Image 1 (tube, rainbow, N blue to C red):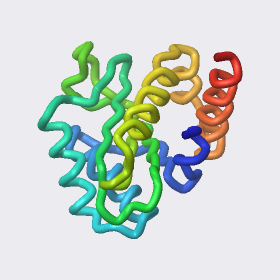
Image 2: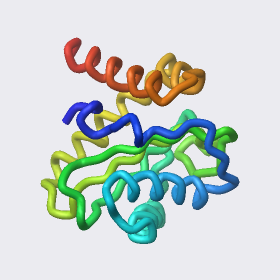
Image 3: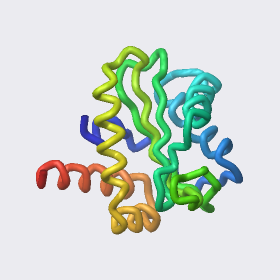
Length: 157
């Protein structure tokens, strides 16, 4: 699964204000629900349930929340850049400002979900890419950075 296959330009939001992890997840849930025609509450419940099992803050200001959802027909992604980082219980205890959420259909094979999580996590481990994502001025620029960098990494592998 390529990043461009799951991340639509209208699922990217910049300059988002949130004062807590829950508010940040609520923004992610709203974007995901709108794009997939789902109920916001159900998406938020799935995200918060996953966070209760363990934080998805992977370090360096990045979180990769994920959930399986009834009603999805394909994997989907949402990217949010917060104005100010929020506490996320990340592995490195650093607050988070970059969130790439992944949503899979409830009945999708687990291996596809895990591969997508691994791909996004590897991508966002790159310090130069994180910096570019923090400086990008538009959703189109963010989309291009994520898709192009992921494609370059795939062809180099």
